[in-house]
Image (tube, rainbow, N blue to C red; front, side, top):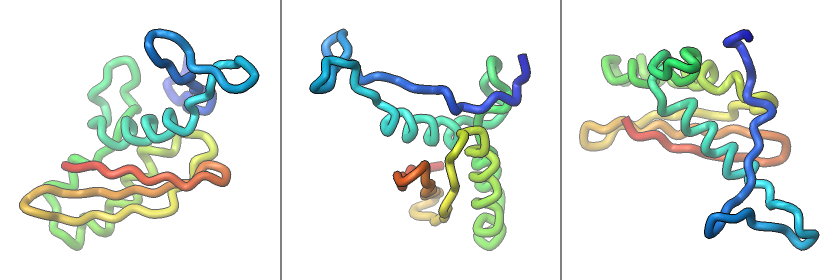
Length: 123
């Protein structure tokens, strides 16, 4: 099996009190919107290469810490794009970085279909 797999088929259902939450038709509620946010967060927050079962999972956002402010601003979008490229159908619409009290704050927005989502990572 190739390690170049995409995350297109990941779906999840909402669970409450140990059981599936159901919709009006009695079918399990799809948590795809929450799962998308979680997938984005994991792909961005995990240090690339640190998860032995999927060494391509993650990002190199951690490398921004050793850069100047100008270098960070140039690198944040390409780093985020690479981290999120395996989520099929996801379009990166923006990424920005700021520093407050020595902490780096990365804000990433992306679109999947009609849904626009934003994830923030603190480094």
